Image (cartoon, rainbow, N blue to C red; front, side, top):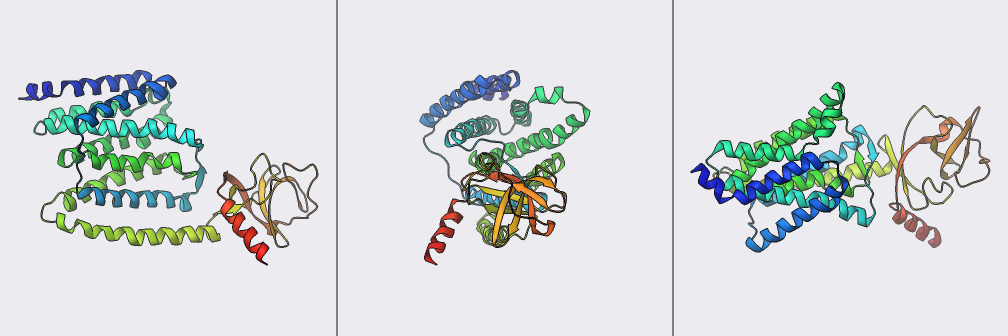
Length: 364
C-alpha cells in the first residue's frame, strides 16, 4: 500500500527532494535565488493550475484570515513596547515585486506539494513525517548554522530553527485536516509584510522565537478544538468578533502614536535642510533620550517651530546645523527644548501631512 501511494506521486516526491537539495547547496547563491528558484516555482504552478483549475474554498479560510490579521496586528504594535527598526529591504516598486516573487512562489508551491503528498498517504505517519522533515531541511540555511560560534548558534537555533520545525509540524497537521489554502494564508502573513512595511518592530532572538512558538501553539489549539470539530464548526463565525475590537484597539494605538504618547514618535519633514540624510516629505522617527552627543540628529522646538538638525557641539547650549547648510544655526538650544534623537526615517510618508499643512496655511 505504502509503495503504491509513493509511486502514485513519485514526480512530486522527487521534485521536493530536488528542491530541498538545491536549497541546501545553493542557499546563498544569488543566481539561484534570483532566477532559477522563481523559474522553478513558476513552471510548477503553471502546470498545477492547468491540472487543477478549481481551488477549494472553505469556511475555515475566513477564520484563518482573521487569526492571521490579529497576529500581524499584535506583532506590529509590539514595536510600541520594544521599539521600531527601519526595514532592511529596499522599498522601490521593482525591489518589492522581486522580493515578493522570491517569497510567495515557494510558499504556494511547497504547500501544494505538501498537501498533495500527505493527502495521498494520510494513513501513513512515517511518510507524513518524512515529507515534513524534507521541507524543514529545505528552509534551513545550514551554512549560517555551521559557521556560527556557540552563542550565535544557540540564538539561531531558538529564533530560526525551532520555529521552522514547529511551523512545519503545524502546517502538516493543517494540510492533513483541511486544505493547502490554510497554511498558505498563515505563511503569507508571516513572510510578506516585512517586505512591504517601511518600519518593523525590534525583536531580539528570544522574542522572535517565543512569539513564533506561542503563535504556533495558539493556532493549533484554535483549529483542533474550535474549527475542525464538527459540533462547533457552525459557531466558528463568532470568532470574527475578535477582528472588530482588535481593529479598534489598533486604530487607537496608532492615533496615540501619532500624538506622541509613546517613546518613539514621528514627524514630517518640511524642508530639505538635512539633504541628503533625509528630504522634504520624509517622516523621521525619533526617540526620547537623555544622552545626546555631537553628531546626533535631534528634534527640537524653537519658538513655534519643530526643527530636525544635527548637533555640531555641546557646551552651555546645543549648537546645530542642517547637513545641507553651510553655517551653524543661530538658535541657542537648551536641553529642555529637545524632544528626541533621530532613529531612522521613512521616505515620502510625510507628504500627506505637508499638503494638509499647506492647505490650511493658505486658507488662513
